[in-house]
Length: 311
Image (tube, rainbow, N blue to C red; front, top):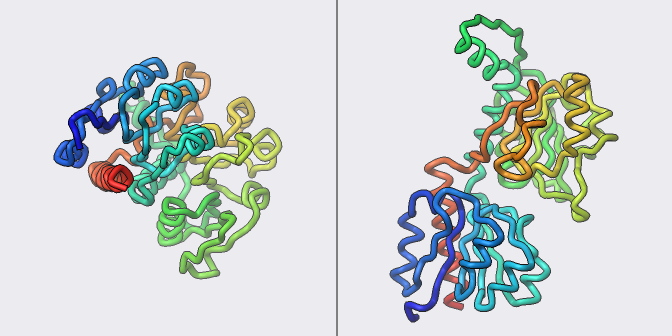
C-alpha cells in the first residue's frame, strides 16, 4: 500500500475531532483526507476532495452524481450510520463502488434520544425551561406515558429498542414493519398493524424507517388529517418522511400537538418556518452523537472500509 492511497473522511463528528479508529487507517498505509472541520461539506468541496480517494468514510452529506463522477478512483464508501438515502446507490453500483453501513451502531443512542423527546413533549419541558429563564413560572399540565398507545413505524435496530423501552414503561405499542421481526414482547402490549391503522390510533407516533422507494412523504396531508387530536409525533429518522406543509397545517390546527424532531431538510434548516414553530421541539441531529455511539459506529465503519479495500 502506498502513501498515495487516500481515504476521505466527512462525518461532522469525525472532522471536528479526529478519532483513533480513523487515524489507525494510516497504519495500513492510507493517507487520511478530512473535509472542513465540524461542517457538512458542500458539493463543490466534495468535488475538490474526492479525486484520488480509494475509500470514503461518509456521513449524512448529500452525494450527487457530479461528486460520483469526480471520484474516479473510488472503490468503497463506508457509512458511519445505517442510512444510504444521501447516496446515489444505483450510480455507485454501476461504477463498482461498494457501499457498507455500520449496522446497529447508533441504535441505543437514537432510541434514548427518542424517549427523551417523547418525555419532553409529554411534559412540555422546553417550554417550562424557557419560561423560567424568561422570568416566568409556567405550569403546563402534562401527560404520563403509562397506558398510552405508542405507534412505531420501522422495527429495525432502533425501532425495536424504542418498543422495548416504552413497553417497559407501561405503554402499549402498535408497530409496522414489512418484515415483522419477533421482538419477544408480550402480545398484551405489542402488536403489528398497518400504517394507516397506526396513524389513526396512536397517541404518540415515532418514525424509524427509510423513505418510501418513490421518495414521497410517508406522512402526507391525508395521513396527517387522520390522526387523533393532539398527536405527539417524533422523528429521529429522516425529515422527508413528513410532508412539511401538511405538518405545519396540522400543528397550527392542533391535530399534531407536538412535533419533536432530530432531523431537518436541509441541515441546519435555512427557514425557521417549521423549526421555530411553537409546537416543535428541535434537536440538531444528535441521535447517534453520543460518546458510545460514535465509538461503535467509527470502529465498524473503519473496519468495513479496511476489509473492502483489502479485498
